[in-house]
Image 1: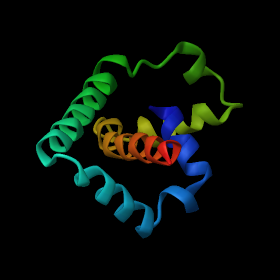
Image 2 (image 1 turned 180 degrees about the vertical axis):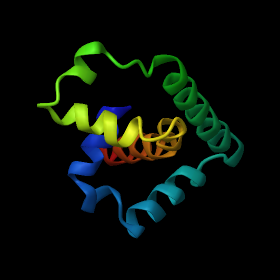
Image 3 (image 1 turned 90 degrees about the horizontal axis):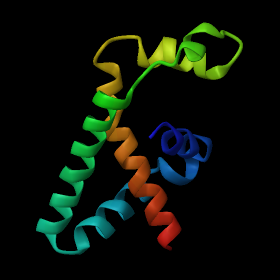
Length: 104
């Protein structure tokens, strides 16, 4: 999940535009609306469960302050206990955006 968000952030003008969000919404809801809603709810549920059960701070991650991951973990994810859950919709958006662009 972190990889998808970071890779989307590196090419922000492609993924985080109003046109891209509208295109994603059109392509996502163009299909069967019930199936699309179920897929979105499933992606969100899997994201929340993955974050809850698999967000483990490795001892080397929190011990070495020479790398970006240390500061990302400490300043963003560990800022508040709910911060890691608030990032899940961004993870899901980045998954859908990457899959949509790769599908084109």
